[in-house]
Image (tube, rainbow, N blue to C red):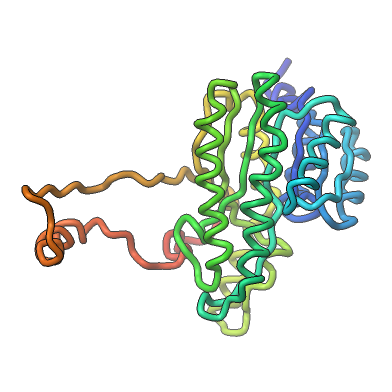
Length: 300
């Protein structure tokens, strides 16, 4: 068998649940999974789930729609039950479902905060938790969660989204640690892509219009191969990592670690911290900038 054929069927026999798969990145992941041999549960609260299932079946893949919400425990359980009832097992979960309620922090409502956390963070927990006992019992499985540079680095007007996406990083690491002895992996991806969810970016000024044109070059289907890889047995040695995908670029993100250590006999006072500790550490401070400052070059 050629390497191309091996790659094409690297998900053969595996059952994958993809949340938020009715469009954008999720749809592209679903189609890529089907082309690599996976049986796919297309989860989306909209009727778009049926359309994606139709596309998958037209290409010869096995697929079923689930229109349950990830935001509630009971409905998330039903998403996984669909995989078990129809396909008999669950091998991978891709936590991709998401919404935006962008607003500057000082104007953000409680509903805008909780709605975003319910879908992104609670939804990722709910679906992963529903699948975890089944993966534990079979001694294998993989989770892929969508994070964002809005959380990893920062962005304007997205306190809710950033908090949820950083929470997902912590959730993924905990899953990786707790389930390692059961051969279950968990990784994160920060995707750059132009989708319906990101199409609301302001484009009034010439600078904003130029930024949007750059975003449009970041095609959502280019995220999918990394997701498929992380769900396949090809990545059996990869867990607890944070990746990024932007057009033809792949990234590996650093994770928090101690950068500097400063000791003082007898402990620290407020004034000694101001006079000695902070000046010694300040060169290693993280800058207070938005995520685009870390990728100033055009997508390639």
